[in-house]
Length: 273
Image 1 (tube, rainbow, N blue to C red):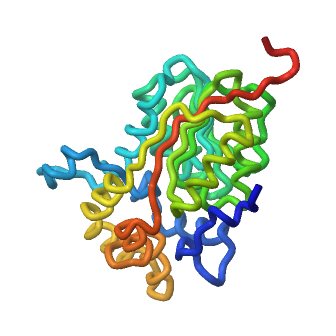
Image 2 (cartoon, one colour):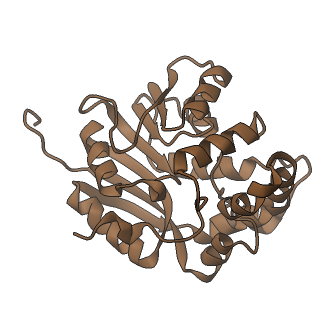
């Protein structure tokens, strides 16, 4: 099995001179309460062709990615974990609209978790700090694990997948949406099998993500100009995938693809029937 670097494509998703934790910490610091989502967004074909509507909220596209991913399996009445919960908007939406029994949002960035703990006061919705490769939960704690647009930053995607299968109950689901190179997607499929996960469904959603980025481009550029110090703006533009950034071009020309997977835990553990 190849090392995880095979799926860690070398495109500008991070500052060259700063650890990931500090990048993320700064990003959360600048955003304040203006952004509840950090993903690239998702527009359906009909939304993309209809264009902007009166009263359009630019966060609608980022919420759209959660709507798409969370609708892939039933969450009602189940225990759900989101790994990489970020600003908490997705977890709050899932709790309100999909009615899980409980939802834990886990993120490795302390100030993001503090923001969520202060901003969202909802029963059965909790946020805590932790690492994706070392999930701080007992075996078989959850029915569904959700992971949106963060796995490409992990040091070991395979270790995260092992941890996800460990905390999932038998036949539980992992809903994963993220971007990779074409070779990275092929390797990722191998790693699913290697860690006891079967692919129930998969869909390339690059065009939907690009449509969202295009629609939100002016908003993203304005927010960066207003909220981010001048010396960090070039790097943040790359991370935000504004038009003409290397990331946007990579998605546009197919060098990078965005996929959504529904995975099921097939791991057999002692004591389980």
